Image 1 (tube, rainbow, N blue to C red):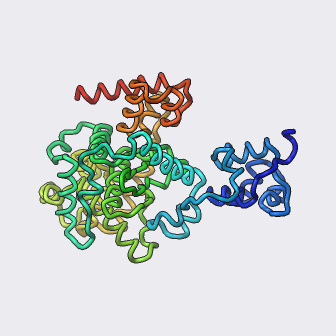
Image 2 (image 1 turned 180 degrees about the vertical axis):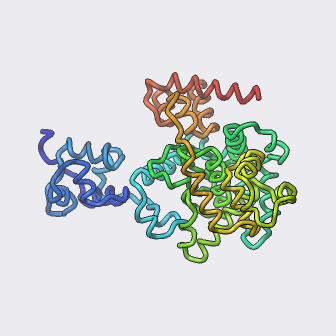
Image 3 (image 1 turned 90 degrees about the horizontal axis):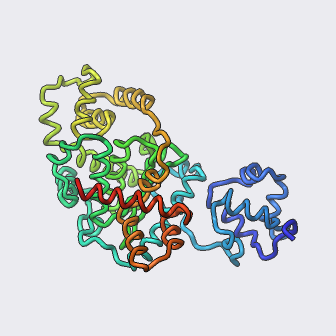
Length: 395
């Protein structure tokens, strides 16, 4: 009977599933609309088990896990974000949104899928994470130039891009062509800008699609720097958290920010562009910052940050401008569901899944599972992926 307690569910597994989502017992009780004592009993060795209907709600609605997980004899060995990521203060890691836990778990699942789809071998001949390591003791300008060269993006090409959308597409394509897979998702925790996961064969970057295109570009290169340092990282949109990190981790975050900034806004060119600026650049009008931002395909905040690093504006001025400009940003609207799903997926991964389906190596159901969609939506997403692929070939 579905109303009877389910036999074989381990209390330790329920507790692990809750803690892996960063939820309290009170949170779970509230989500299920059940008494606190009842939910506490499910995690007690002497307590009652949930009914089948309750277990389904726990698995699919609250913990976002397969039902079969709850019949394991013990919690599986899964690294929690607090142990995996060194680049957020402990207090921030302890307060991560449940959705952020889900996104990290999805990223790990994608890495497993990548190994299956590509049969354990990265398809890229050039692998920047393996071939171009960064060293925090070496000059940033030289290293950023080396990474840019490895990605095959010349400044002249960057300056010719006509929109933020094109800029993000080009940087993302270049990173993927060099062996790093880039996925995106609209995070519910808006202050997370992205994270990266190390792997010897399938390193991965995961971006918050809810942020602006220019922010996504900076986050992409920031997380790329993490991978080249051989450090998994998670980053926030607002940078004050860096000051709360231990010294070693703070230096990592500051270094990755500087590498990303130098790649996007090379010092030699930026110096020429601001050569006529007053020593105190705070006197400049906003349109001057906007023009420079458009030149490099970055945010106005990134431009002022570069000026702050050069001691041409004050910290207070930078914080004030960043806050004002952040409040002016428009959130992305809805739109084509298939276009959104395609944007979330790594291009190289999605095209390989479609290709394997065409070669009759995987079924529609398998391909849909790899892409994270229902089988009934496969045809529409397949069409969108192929259309984007043909569009890229024509550019």
